Amino acid sequence: MAESLGLDTFLGNAYVDAAVFRLRPDYRAVLLAADCLEPGSGDDASEALLQQAELAARRALSTDSADRLPHIAAWREAYRAFGAKPQRTRNSVEALIRRPRLGCPA
Image 1 (cartoon, rainbow, N blue to C red):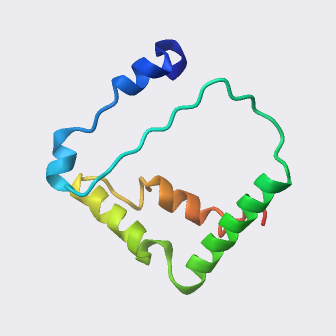
Image 2 (cartoon, helix red, strand yellow; image 1 turned 60 degrees about the vertical axis):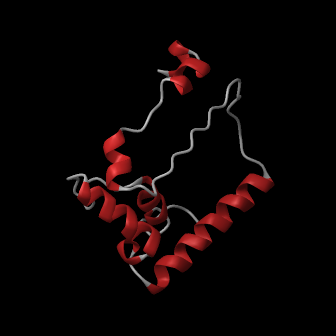
């Protein structure tokens, strides 16, 4: 979708519905767009960053379940307020932090 519109148009058309801010005045969104990136193999530096992130996720989940971590609990609360079921539709933070526990390679 972004390719057919052009990045400037795509970003310029982005918005957050006013209902979101009425419900969660503290909500913030950041959009990041990158153009002309070439996919390729990782290197030692990117592999080290990935391993650090996986270790941090494992540590966080070693003492509590994902839904009890404060930043994830806040997202679950927001999802419920919008009428979504957070057990069925997980936010991206929760989905990512669960991956190491679900068997992604360390």
